Structure formats: C-alpha cells, structure tokens
Length: 343
Image (cartoon, rainbow, N blue to C red; front, side):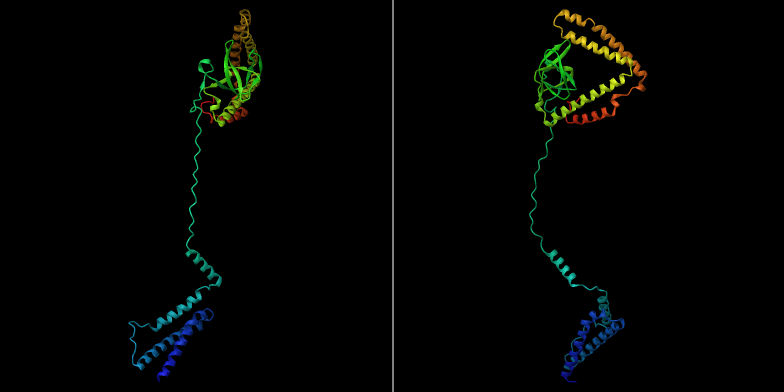
C-alpha cells in the first residue's frame, strides 16, 4: 500500500472516531439501550483499528514511535466510553436561563465589595440619676420656731383660719404652706403664712399638727419631686377622709361610740373658746367644764372599745376596704420618688 493510501486510511479512521466521540453523549440520551451498546462496541473497534494503523504507518515510514510504558487495554477503553454515555444520561439538562443565573451568581460573588465607610458612632449621654431630697439637704423637722422651718405640706384635709381664729374653710392635703410666723391658740401651735403656688387672698393660719415641715425650700425640689409630694399627701388626705367615713358608718353600730363622738365635739368647742378668750375671767369660765368633759370622753371611749371587742365579727375594718386599699396603693407609688418626705 502506498504512502498516500495510508494517509487517506488514517484520516478517515480519525475522523470517524472523533465523530463518534463527539455525538455519542448527546445521542446517548435519546437512543435505546441496544443501540448504545452497539455504539460502545464501535468505539472500541475504532480504537483498535487506529492503534493498528498507527503502528503500521510508523513501520512503513521506518521511524516507529516508542510505545508507552503501559498501554491502555481494550476493556478500559470500552469501560470509559460506557461510563461517559451513562453519565450523560444521568446528568440533567441545563437550560440557558439556569446557565445565565449561575454565571451572574458567580460574577456577583467574585465582584469585590464596595468600600462603604463605617456608620458614625453616636455619642449619647447617659441620663443622670436625680438627686434625692436628702442629697439636696431637705429633711423633715419640727414646726417650732427653734427648728427654723420655713415651709411644709398639709398632710391631709385641714381647716384654715383667718388671723382672728375664725375657720374660713378646709384645704385639701398636698398644698405647700410657706411659714411666715407662729402663734399660740391655747395650747395649740398655729403656723401663720400662705399657700403656694396658689395663694389665698389673705394671710391665714393652720394648726401645726396638720403640717409636715421640712428644711430648705420647695424650690429646691425638681418638678417631678414637687408633683409627687403634692399627689402623695393629697391621696393621703383622701384615704384618711374615707377611713373616717367608714369608721363613722361602723361606729353607728356601737352605741357608746356615738356618745363618745358627741362628747368629744363638745370638748373641742370648749377648748377653742378657752384659747380665744381675751381675759382671765372668760378663760376661767370657758375652762370650767373642760376637765369633766375630758373624763366623760375617756369613759365613753373605754366602753366603746369594750363593745367593739365583744362584737368584732360585726364590725368591718376600714383599712381592709377595697376602695381604701386602692388609694393607699396609688399614694405609695408617688412616695417612691420622694424618699424621706413620705410619712
């Protein structure tokens, strides 16, 4: 066979082998199993023929190429071909849209992140804890002149008098009272001054027993502390008023309690007359019946107490009344803001 014939034969063998290798994976998914097995046999046969032709052509030219250290056997070639066809069958088809999505995802992942400057740190000041009244030098003191008290707060609803000693009305608890002076009404210390911030038209006086006095000035308190102080003692006054009403209601069941309350009212009127007397004779006449009345009140109170103990199951405790407890609970919430000023 001439050299030209060998070249033509080799070219046809290589071309047919390449065509088979190129289209076998694609056609493998569409051909029946018998056809695919036949293709694998053809591939193996072509490989054998290519090897034989390559060796013969090398011998013909007189320069045979050296054989590799380990030749690939026919069975290995067939196994590889079958494996490629099976993998092509098992591999799901990739659509164009999926390929584009994968490409975009890969490009996005590979793209360097933009250089974004860090968010500026906002410096926030921590709210300072409010100073307690004690830290401001505000503490409770006595109402006497020697204590130096200049202001106080009504601890409950209390009667207010003009400078002549006449009661002009009642003022609810929680009002601030600025002390301008002091007077004696019999044995009762009276504080002279006016309320703040809403003043009465005239200077008045109130019993020192109805006022809780403090050092410094109400202006030294914060607005929150002022409001808490007002609300605390206003509710305190409401609680005391409700308790008195409940006691009166329950006392009507006690025959001695009613008599004791009447005797006590008469005793208070005699004491007020004695304190307002302008001369010794009037004072003596006003105080003449005070001692017997006081003894009568003590006797009636003792009997009322004994009756109450004997009929305890019939008397309700006003401090366990739901309305009373509700007021006390609300009052105590305001007391948390004024430690040392709530009593």
